[in-house]
Length: 326
Image (cartoon, one colour):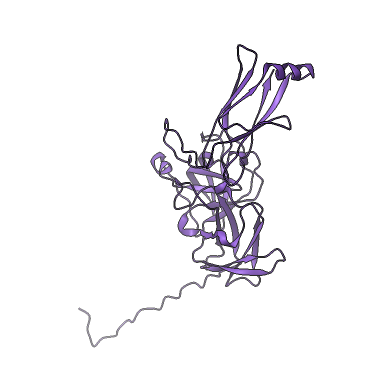
C-alpha cells in the first residue's frame, strides 16, 4: 500500500475538447410511412426534420414559417443530431424492388461522429439501413469507409415505399438521411396542409440566423402507389383488354402470395389514352372496344400511349405509363 505520509498524486485534470456546434444543417424528409411503424398504413402525412452541425452540435429549435417568411409556430425541439450527409454524384437508375449490385453511392457524412455500418440479409429484412437519398427511399447492405467521413454504399435495395418514380431524377449534391427514428423529429400535421408548400426553419446555438428549408407537396404517406405490371391483349371479338396490378400504401413489406389490403376507402383508377380520360374503373381492367380500335387505326395510329393512376382517398397516384401496339 502507498505510504500515507509520502507525496500524493492527485492526478491531472482532463480538459474536454470544446467542440464547436457550427451552423445547423437541416433536411426535410417526406416519408410514405411512419419511421416507427413502417409496416402500417398512415392516416396522416409523415414529414420529418433531420438536423446536425459540427462535432459540438447537440440540439436546436424547430419553427414553422409562413408564406411571408415570418416565423409562426414553435414546432418543438430537435434533441439529437441525425446522421445526414451529401451525395456528391447523382445515383443512377435501377430496377425497383431489386437488390442493385451494380450501382454504388458515394456519401460524404456531415461530420466525423456520423458512422454507417453494414447490414446482412436478415438485418435488411428487419428494416436496418433505410435511408432517403433525394426523394428515393432505399436500403444499403454495404457501407465501406474511404476516409474523410466518406462512405461507398453498395448492395442497394431501391425504390422502397412506392418511390421508384424518383429513381431516374437524381441530381448531384442531394441530401442523404439515415432514417433512424431516434434521430428524426416528426413535424405534426397541424403545422401544415398536406400537398401544400411548407417552409421550416431551425435555430441552434451556433446559428446567427435561422436556417430554412422548404418542401413543395408533403403528404407522400397519404398518396396511393402507382399501379404496376401492365398487360394487354386482343380478345376474340376484337376488343383490346388492358389489365394491371394494383399496389397499396400497406405494401412496404407485405408477405408474398397474400393479397395486400387496399388501404383506401374504395378501389378506383383513372385510365388515359393519350391525353383523354378513357375510363375510371373500379377494378384493374379497361376495355377498348373493337370499334374504337378501328377508329384509332383509321386516324393513322399504330400504337396508343396509356397512363393509369390509382385514385385514393386523399390523392391520386403517379402514373403507370406504357405504349400499346394496335
